[in-house]
Image (cartoon, rainbow, N blue to C red):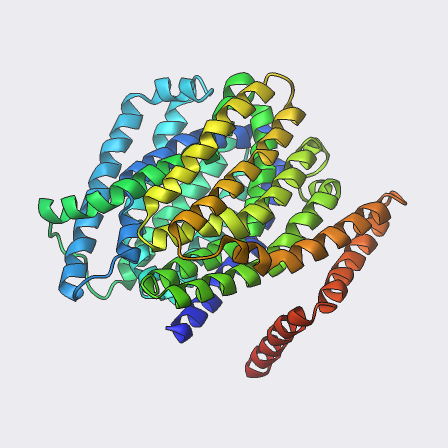
Length: 483
């Protein structure tokens, strides 16, 4: 199992590193071609589509990865029922979007843009067709194959969206890139299949799956609401320009952070699911993943906060200057959320407790919604900082629920990463002071280099971290020799 987990983590990490090298390049080019308004329009469309995608999935993906089946026959039956159900729900939801496209567009602040919303609805059946098959590859730790699939979704927007944007197709270039990427993914999965999915369906199997997945669906809804409620509020009280300025830097942060999260979280969930009945191995696996993720993510979040203006200027250009505060505050809060509350959610799911993760999300929403609703009445800056600060409440609730429902000492989670928090804070304060001594691009680049070196030097002062750094160094050298 450990060998499978390490191999899966390696391929998953390679996938996300490639994605995060190519995707930002695509977004940077598009950000210089298109106005923030185009990204704001896409954000409101994706708010509706992601909601439909969540309903169509019904939590079946997580069920198939987490559940222990008696034999392959039972597994194949469940896969078939999940596949047919998801595809049917997706087509129904797409039909609903087509019929009420104008009303939905007005609801999310894009009145008159019902047609692009209806076109984008094609993502629902395409996602339904691919999601169950990809879930089974994750269950079997076959992340090497998923690399080739992910490459398709990475490259397609680069070769589709940019030429269309240059031709003046505005937000349609973004829509086309996403649709074509998912279409190519579906085709690739069809070509790769060793055997086609059966057309078996049973209401008994469906009922059993849904009885478990109902809580997963509720959890997914709460996560969706947490992720999109700020988008909805901005679209109602501001305009597409502010929404674009808000969502683009958040997408950049998510892209950078997901080098670790998107690559490690699926592997962690699959590994924890296999160890769900062994408390010792369960905790060891979690703490190992958390520590290696925090080693990179915590200083990354602090660094993006300190150098927020420089990053936005380089990546997006002068028309996005207001995006700096969004990028900095969201990066800092995301770094700590990712290695604590977000990973805790993987524990709840792996233990078959999506209801607990749902409770964490609900308690957060009770605080989040009134806070950002009040703050949006003031100005954009107040709204941005409030949205990031209020995430501390979710972190605290996640730790409380871990103590109540998981056989693990909550303080072990904090102690496991305290070195990276302390080191990043020290280097971050020093870097901020150093950065403001002069105002030039060369000086900023020099400060970034000094920050990186200082982080490694300070970290090396901790004896326990020397071992971790030595392992990473030896592993890198071994791979270089093999290549």
